[in-house]
Length: 251
View 1 (cartoon, rainbow, N blue to C red):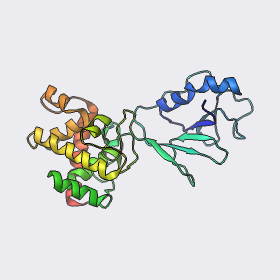
View 2 (view 1 turned 45 degrees about the horizontal axis):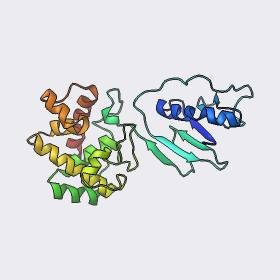
View 3 (view 1 turned 180 degrees about the vertical axis):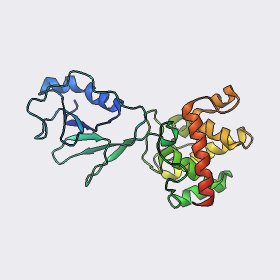
View 4 (view 1 turned 120 degrees about the horizontal axis):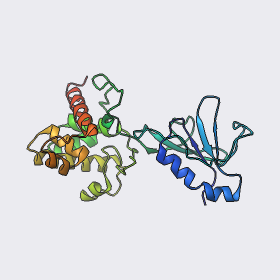
């Protein structure tokens, strides 16, 4: 039985709210149900724990919450001093937390990130990137661009589709390369670069096709004999290319 769950966030991901609501019947049987309210800051709360912030006329949640965008920023999980478990799209302050999900900003056709000027990360995981790049013959600047696009250098990133870690390895891909912990930076980067090297070879050194295959799968690239006509993949390839050039120059 799930106890003391609060879902917080005005734009919280639909799957996460749905997960919380899924436990509502069990919780309601034992207590006062699941409550929904909007606090003074405009943040929507879903919780089976009524707090002082909640209006006294807060009703039990009997309807689905508003839908949320498919592409999401990070979802944080933490437990407060009272033992209440929270899920929120706002990074907790002074709390130990776990990042549950992160979306791929470079895959979002509606992303407002300025890819030609967004801040680069030139120092994170230097040893891991250089080791894998030399081992598999892949430009380190391309690896850094891909990590930036996939996870923004967050080693705990996990997508709703199950991709994990810095280079967002799907479990099957991780298994291909003997990864035992996809959230371990060295293992993740080693496998991701090895996979990228394979794609570059398979597409005769065409980095755009290799990036498209990394995003949409090798089969999709072969099916369309080029970059698949998916909005997500088209913007992803373009943005990885922009980041690659910037990481080469370092600016």
